[in-house]
Length: 574
Ligand code: 9MR
Image 1 (cartoon, helix red, strand yellow):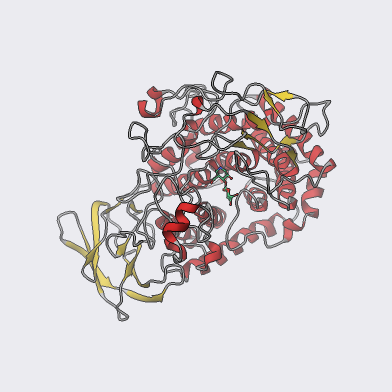
Image 2: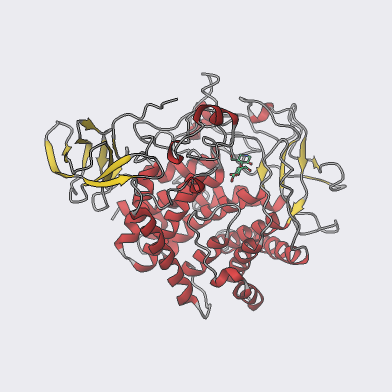
């Protein structure tokens, strides 16, 4: 199988910021520098130069050169780059490049909502659908859900939340990080010099049913999941009270396509876990401080839930979800919850200032450890979420200067990695760095770079974040934009029971702003395995609905995209 990768000049197919870095990658056999031309929409050369040979790239196996046209700063649309007889996909240079991507990536969450009808007047008729999983036949959930046999004797109302990905499951651990990243997208507006005081995230900026309620819409969206996370908490008086059930999903896997409201499978609560409990604690604690000015009663309820969850986790510190519990839904197992403990203690400390949480977080090995790993944070490694917030959210931590410095140091490491990459992304080139959902890890490394920029104002960190997005939007070996609706050649057949246009033309593609999981050298699904066996890491991706391990949508991946898109949108309004 040889994918059609289009022109050998690889660009961010959406474009570049006037005052940002502008780099492209040429795939060529040539070893000596080659001339390049930047052309305007009329075909006239507006800039030229010569390429810098970069050698053979381990991630793609390609011989590449770098084209650097950073010096071109004028706004223009439909520019192209030509080199070695090849002309790139067209792109723009504009200040407003990322404003709509911020909206699109955040809008994804409303369309993923469970337990509420999706309103076509808000998001287009192709995405309108009845409420899913409200106990209306053939649905068998989620208003009165039993546990798996032997797990508990009670039933719970666990309606609402977001479907996590292309399945109809709802999982606390990826829901927790996704909620936190939406909350942090908002919270950044309080501390980041470039965030424009949050006007771009204010009430009325998203197409959600809560618009007009005087609350920033991104907080409304985060609350939708937060309310569900709280419903997953084991009721008082029951064994493990205060813990959170790890997940809720169908008894057996269903086929594609399948509308949420048409899912006939029995739904089941799976056992509580310490990891889920700490995700609830962290996300609810953060939500409490951000919601306090808007709805003190809700904020109080969230903080109570967070404290109870944290106490329950301390009382049951090693209740792990089973790696084998993967029928009908993903396992999301994680046998190291020290990072979740650190994250939860950090959020509770930031919200309450209480010494007990401060003591716990400073005693954690993650407080001083090197937690910004090469392959980035994600649902199973969450310490960075705590450290980033301790660095940015005002607090009285005695070693706060060191905490902030640790973010800058991590960003320097990511910049060094990116400098070695043919495609400029902050991710190492070896196969082990290309794994399931890895696009979100690349973006999460961009979150660290962007935060270093917010903390220091040093342009190199901002540039690093921009170049990570260049990779996501097409500057890569496959010449593939991984975000639906964004770029000339963009993913549109992501694995989803709802957005299954590839299987049924009456169904929509994923909405604009949906990110695919990305290249995964482990080829963890049969379709990718038979098609792509032997692929160089960056080629281990296919835009086909059958490849759930390279091409699914997921809330915890879109939340990383939304954070970075929002950061970049703020840069482009400078
Ligand atoms: O995002 C998850 C990834 O990190 C894991 O490697 C993978 C296998 O356990 O599961 C991914 O999550 C999937 C979940 O298990 C089921 N719903 C879809 C999720 C995204 O593919």
